Length: 97
Image (cartoon, rainbow, N blue to C red; front, top):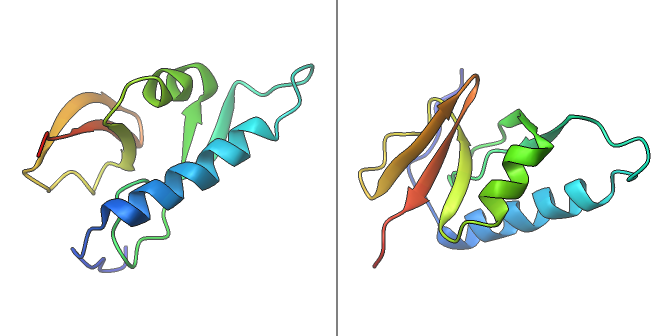
């Protein structure tokens, strides 16, 4: 595992979310897979991690303001609260400013 910069940016989180949302919308409705591969939404400058997530769960995350998905080793920011733990990833909630 490569060392990842702790330089976290909400802007990078937002861009990754947009990319992930686009990836989600490109799946065909008739042959939609049960899960998709998305980018880690940690917002770290050097992170290029990917993870597999069930589409239904990702839709729940998208519908919950302030929630985002990160790989399991990106849970070290005390400004975020753990929402749920899954195999290979976590759902976190961004603390209110």
